[in-house]
Image (cartoon, rainbow, N blue to C red; front, side, top):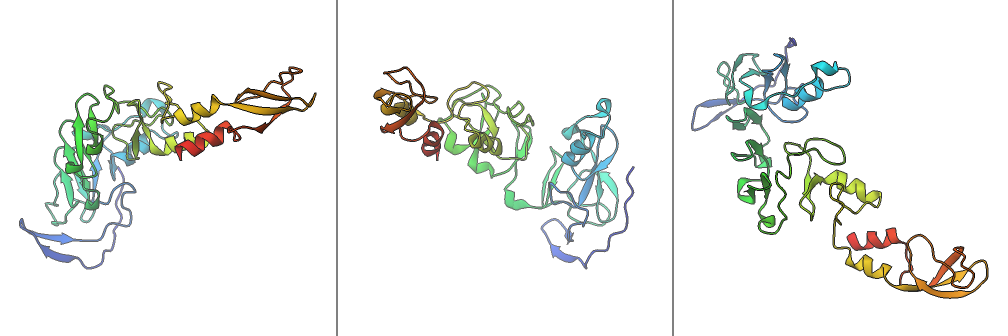
Length: 278
């Protein structure tokens, strides 16, 4: 079991709430890297103490851990927390029963979740079964997709059963409870936003799950359908041919050693796509 060293805090600020007097103290210098909070959790699976479930999962699934011992914490089974100020272990609750410190301005009794940064507008979705950010009034729960989407997408998205209950097709991190930004593709599949941007850098513009186009590509298709003038580097003949993304065939000597001289499709395919999706 980890040991706790003494931490010296500045004098606390005493404020009055509707419930009782609460001590507001600065966060511990050894605070969680994922959330702002004044408590630690005892993992019900292994009995070890961690700052949060993400800290647990990162440690227990690291390469240094025996593959047979790797596991994720059952988040809804968390029952015990340890106050970061006085070290008192107690049942999960918002205020420490010993020193009265507020362990998190946002507290969800269902998820046993603490967070002092309420600018995220956290809320609990009963149908998702977890807490989400962004404000409850800005999201709706799609029963078919099994997750919360922005209200701007209501009646405008393509439903895919349990759309977020899978790993990201690029990085393979589980999407449903990820802390990263997620985007919903036209086909209804979901992916991390940063993974989508990485795909764009490599000129990948199809869904990695179903291969459908990520955007409306009609402008690019019309460019590809056009004809262009080419000059053959071997025989010197000029030809009017159908545009091709790889090479153009000389109509005179059948050589592919040609270059484009005229035509609306004067750019490469990749630059044309970049222009369309920008």
